[in-house]
Structure formats: C-alpha cells, structure tokens
Length: 130
View (cartoon, rainbow, N blue to C red):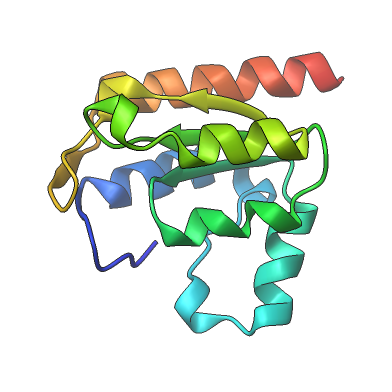
C-alpha cells in the first residue's frame, strides 16, 4: 500500500474485499509508516502475503518457510522474476497473478476477476492449513 512507482487503480477494492472477507486476519502493510522492527514482524508473522511487484516485497526475507507470496507481477512476466527466485531460495510458496500484470512504471487495474482469483487462492491455502 502506498507505493510510489506504480499507479494501482482499484487498490481500495482489494483492501475492502480482503478486510470484509478475512477481517482481523488482514494487515494492510504501509512500510513507509512503520519502523524497521514492525516491518520485520509484519512479514515474519504473515502466513499469506499479497502484493504488487515492488521493493516492499523484499521484506519476504523475514518471512517464515512455507508462507505464501501471491504477487501481482510486472508484464511481461519474464522481466521480473526476482521474487519467484527469492521465494524458491527461502522456502516460500510463490504464485504470480499474471491476470493483473502491469508494465513497469505503468498502471495496474484491480478488477473483479482479480479479486475472485486472489480470494479463491487465499481460501485454498487456508483450507490446506486446517
């Protein structure tokens, strides 16, 4: 949340849907508003991380093995495999949502198709953990 590099149209829809569906289990991460210790704790305690490709996702280095990163990647996808590779090295499960891809420094549009796909993936992960 609050990234300066990409314009995200409909970001409020994503936040609202995640909060509506998962309530207090959701933390909206605004790294620029947090101390380093709070940023580390946010990622360490997260079981599922949903985010737009960008520097803030580098905090996954503090995430626990077997957590999940659901990334809204760059387009074309092959230009931004950083987090896929980092997740593989750290034992974090990685899923890109190519249906939401944006050009670097471009615009990302969050729509109902993306909201459905993300919440479906989160539900599947949560079901497996029960």
